[in-house]
Image (cartoon, rainbow, N blue to C red):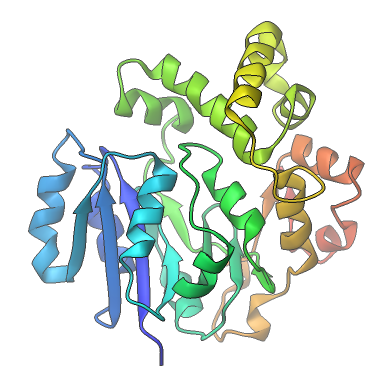
Length: 289
């Protein structure tokens, strides 16, 4: 059996990092974590966990994407890999997926991960140097043979009213500037334009001038073009066309843990672009919020 390497990056997650590490731990796994020079005690907490949970700990001042790339590079050669977020507590489904032996596997639920060998991932390109939208850009380039609509974990901060804003506040007192940078990253990562953005996130319509300016900045920096359509559509096309019931492949998957939830706006956007298959709704593999 190939070695299994679970990898991720972290910044200022002191309140969640211990539970997250414990939830992904298995004695047979390699766990590689890159800390982007946290200032809230995250690094010190990881040092305490290092011996008991056999962690490989690295530090690199980086975006989320570059941190994941650096972590993946330090996974053992020929290992089967999956990325994880250090503000998520993972459940048994995460481990069942990793130990299934399946490759080119996308887990698509509230929490995403991608299972593939290190070498095959790098053949299609490592993570981009982006702080937002980096997962869709990355996945839009990877080979996806099978997609599971599966809940593999729960964000530790689900009680927060607006998780996106609260995360940015935790990262920096200049969180509004970070949000604008994230929008630029989103434009670049997804290779979308202003009209796409307001279709996907209708509540952004009130910021027309600002969003158009941010789109122009993203164009000057260069967008990631990975297909003949934007990367978001390309990702969903691959994910939805390969979606199947995980119970066909893995024993003891509870039906209540099978779901992909799409917002009504995303669903309409995909339907307008002839990507979403209503049959998936009828089979209860996706639900519309």
